[in-house]
Amino acid sequence: MDDLSPGAVAERLVRLGKEVDAVAVVTADHPHVTRAIDHLQVSGVPVFALISDLTAQSRAGYVGLDNWKVRRTAAWAVSNICKQPGKVAIFVGSHRYLCQDVCEMSFRSYFREHAPDFHLLEPLTSLEDARYAYENTLDLLRRNPDLTGLFVAGGGITGLMRAMRDEGTGAYRRIVTVGLELIDETRTGLIDGVLKLVLSHPIDLVAETAVDAMVRATAGGRREPTVQVQLPFTMHTPENL
Image 1 (spheres, rainbow, N blue to C red):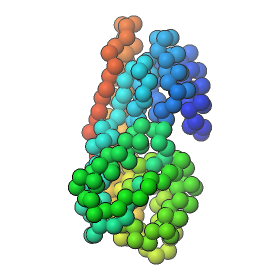
Image 2 (image 1 turned 180 degrees about the vertical axis):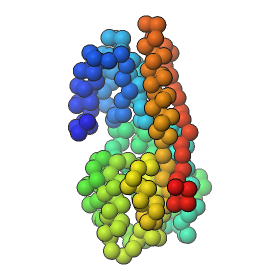
Image 3 (image 1 turned 180 degrees about the horizontal axis):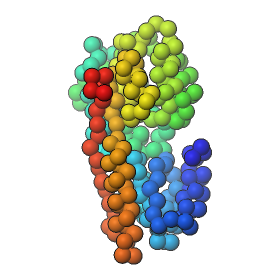
Image 4 (image 1 turned 135 degrees about the vertical axis):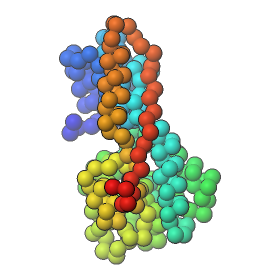
């Protein structure tokens, strides 16, 4: 979908509910989405939260990662790879995605517990948009020439990496940047040193598990108990691509 607003997602869910037996959705958590999921549940169409969980009690389940562990692992990497303590920034796409909201809490909790000498800046947002992430990254680097770490927990990472390359001082070589999801762009980012680590969903396993859960939820014509499946995540460095 080009329009990822909760209202647009809710409308699409209701339309899909007239055509399919089950739905898996990646979306921001919002009352519009909850109402659409409730509507589909009454109609006998189970809805699964994929990648980012939802608060809708009528959802059929969640298939994704343990986001608390993912984000604390990112914090562990930043604090251990950085040559010395300094400022650390966090980019989120939107706090409406529960997985990204957990990001800040778990990321900060690790530093508070294990690396209190680091200074965590207030989170920045990319609005899941590469152009917005580009502009915000350039501004971040200009305002914080002593930045030592950066965690990209939401969309827009391609814009952030472009800004790191365009910045001009080679700051990306000293800033420890951790991103999410191994795609062509982040693979290149690892190879050329813009990224130091990428944490990723096992996409094939996510798809297989989600389809299996949807099949079981629709088999036999009875409502299954809510499913909560947390899958292992993968870690990628320039040396294991």
